Length: 304
Length: 304
Image (cartoon, rainbow over all chains, first blue to last red; front, top):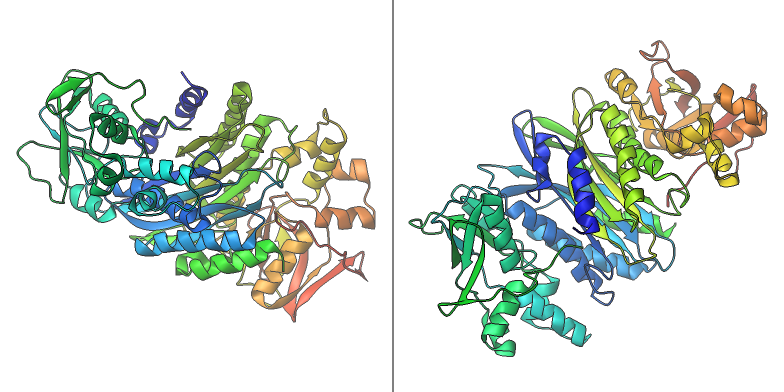
């Protein structure tokens, strides 16, 4: 058990209100006067969640996008957000960060309502935190709710952001759709709103398809088989489509597609790619080209 | 204009939603489906907002208290909060932080609902951020709304926390009510709820009585005269009651008493101390023992 896991156990002992959902479901669901609020917070730390050389506008964009993605997985309407910002000491950097943040917020009709701005001691790594508030307008899916026999889908290919990160690490001037996928993820708010009334379970793929699918299976007390790993044409163009590439794509984080379970008889109401199915039992099975493969040592990105 | 002020100007250009209140009023007021939410975020940085040697339980308490104090100034009921936490690398430190946070949250019936836990690069200064959500149950006071002729009150003496900080800086084992005032401020939620329907204007005193009173006056387009600086018996016991001590107390931050304006004819519905009055004009006048004094160079604690 990691130090973070032990701290989360302590947090669970504090966060006993039902609205906290046992800290098991990415967001809190707080009902006040008949209004159902979806609450989430994501924090990004320099050198941990982004590269010091990443363009500041992209860091701002990504902070907004990862929070909006949590709302998307609940089918929630963005209602407002608060920013905790550590001044960088470089005013043009700060201004560019805010421009990127604003682009992502505007794109998704998410108003910035307030927050706090702090100075850090000089040379300290920066961190930025956003709290997003959404309003549930219908059923609110959870990680749990899937049933044996359900099909598992994602709203788009996986692995682009992982390769984009590798390209960005290799070259400061790397660009193109894969680097864009890493730096400017697109939260699937429209898809989430259309899916929420129908899915048995839903979450966003932030830590890799294999890891997040296995988490969803565990939350449902079910086994899951992943039998297809969808790759983008951009990814195949630089990495090919080998089994190793497919596994790498399924272990890569930062995709922010939606992962959801639907009854086998139901057609998804949005464009989506079937990637597997749930069955009675436990654990994850990986099949590629019809053959069961041994699981990689590490299924995905364990949170820091 | 400081770098922070310039950044706030940029933020204002982004935070144009009416719920943001122009980022001029400590909190956001977001109305959804007839429910009025009060939203605030405060972040504490090691070496900036607390001393590296402060007891972790007190740092946790204070993070909760400063956020709850913002709700108190709006007369809001605590509804839920989200924590962004940077693991310290010392599990007993983290556990103690959480214990203190939980004590303050429990004391004020504020449920912890979620958040994010991050690792920082080793040796990086830690920072902690809390987003508090309250529900307005009646009128929501602002900094503005005071009228010429109104009396200005605080809910308790000022300056204790400032002297407590000095004592803590001088000795690692300092204790007593003044150090307690610095480390474990008491948010005035009960007082805020009773005051909110009656006051013309209200805010918490986080940056010093002189500075916060002058901000309230500016927000109202009025002049303010401070004619009394209430000291605690604990403070007088260690610092006496000289004019210099009074001025120091009125410039000290971290008090978290409520500062409010009431019509001269109205008796405050809670225990409170009159400290001044508003009049037509602009600016701050300081009177002690009936004599007008020159203002100190720095009125209080300018936010970092």
